[in-house]
Amino acid sequence: MHGYAHLFVPGPTNVPEPVRQAMNLPMEDMRAPDFGGFVKPLLDDLKQVFRTRTGRVFVFPSSGTGAWEAAFTNTLNEGDRVLMSRFGQFSTLWVEMAERLGLRPEVLDVEWGKGVPVTEYARILGADRSHEIKAVCVTQNETATGVTSDVKAVREVLDALGHPALLFVDGVSSIASIAFEMEDWGVDLAVAGSQKGFMLPAGLGLLGVSAKALEVSQAAGMRRAYFEFSDMIRLNDTGYFPYTPATQLLRGLRVSVDLLLKEGMENVWARQHHLAGGVRAAVRAWSGCGIVAAPEFLSDTVTTIRVPEGVDAVAVIRTAYDRYRTSLGAGLAQLSGKAFRIGHLGSLNEVMLIGAVGAAELALLDTGARIEAGSGLAAAITHYRNAKTAQQKAA
Ligand SMILES: *Cc1c(COP(=O)(O)O)cnc(C)c1O
Image: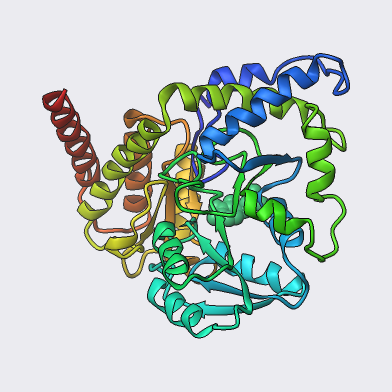
């Protein structure tokens, strides 16, 4: 087969060439005298990506799921009440983990396509006068449905009520991609993973922890071993780790953090917004297709696309892969067969996304969708051109 294979799933994302090359190096000694001099500034610079000044960032050799577990077990006690909401596959798994660990999640089920129910959170937290709820969880970007929730609004609810619960955010598919302000939004635990906005292979669980959460962790009584914060802190402060770090991934992370900070986080967020707009324009132009996310919850990192009645979304994804060497994201759980996803986060540009739209359009046509050939492409191209013209005028 000639040409490239195309990857448009919402994680793992495309790895930029300089990042990939930085990981291609001989094994190194993680106890070498100069290794700490590499690690310390890396951990420090990660704080700029998470936007925390007073917190710190841990890097665990795990996936994002490990960072979820680290967050819960280091800061809570068994039986603690935790306020959560469920509106997609990832928020569902997060609730399951809380249950498995012996927490008592109070779960609000929300229709898929919408996000965190802030008013309901306010009602429940307002009624919790004895402050039994110890943590409030927000899945900032539900990757299954392409829904972005308002983290800041949840912080405002907590502040208005003077409620001391810790604020947990699942930012696995949002941190390093869309606006995230750990310090300013008072986020206590911020979960991320290497294979999404950080543009790396899977294998690192990144966790931002606020000063308040660090203090709470000293008395928190849940069982934990591998993910113990205090072991990590003791070694990280000298530039080392309590167990063998994924040195290759850390070398890649150094370059990806450099790329992000050189571009500037605000510019990264603006780029994601610009790229997402073209994909959304294409979906709106495909007759019979729809965006699963309600208009006030649209995600700039992934779009979940409902296929027309009579079309099988599994066949769309399969056709894109078999005939066009293009990976589109699957519809998960209740969206299986009904929807597919285009991941538009990480290292991408307009032409790559025109390719994604083109591949989806080919596969939709091949599987019986009555869309007009070129309709989505024309809409995406027009969106990108208009947005560029507007930028140039403003400059
Ligand atoms: C990908 C993802 C996860 C799971 O992360 P893993 O790295 O696969 O463990 C959790 N939450 C969200 C929102 C995700 O997108």
